[in-house]
Image 1 (cartoon, rainbow, N blue to C red):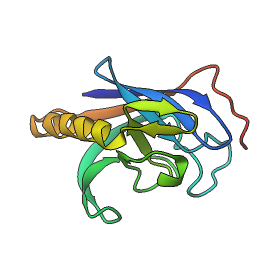
Image 2: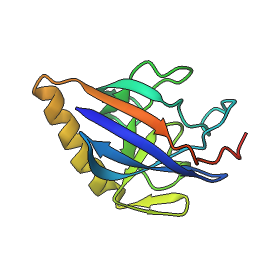
Image 3: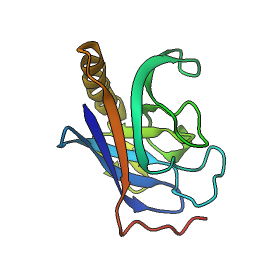
Image 4: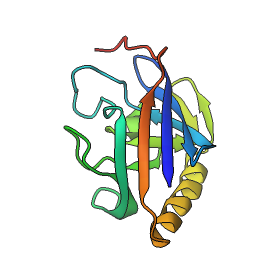
Length: 141
């Protein structure tokens, strides 16, 4: 299973994108700001391709998708949330988007988590490819 995130717009507070699963639009994403220099808890992970596993989150106390081998980051998850205040480098998902926010996040996460779990149970690998649109603003440093 291939998950693709196309980062589209960035503000001083967040980065909004679109998520595709095996080429089909799945939902919107919200991440921290893409920065050249990392600010802990306020910076999006580097664009790239990462394997995904589902394991126990010590922070959330439940099984959740986790991205592996993210340079300079640990414990990067995909989860529900609405604004940059709800993430510290993780990818939030939502059915709708607004300025610096995504909505209907629990619904989007539930559907996505089901697909990831099924793929892994069926013996498939799950990979996420995070891409930056050429027009993405890099105003935050």
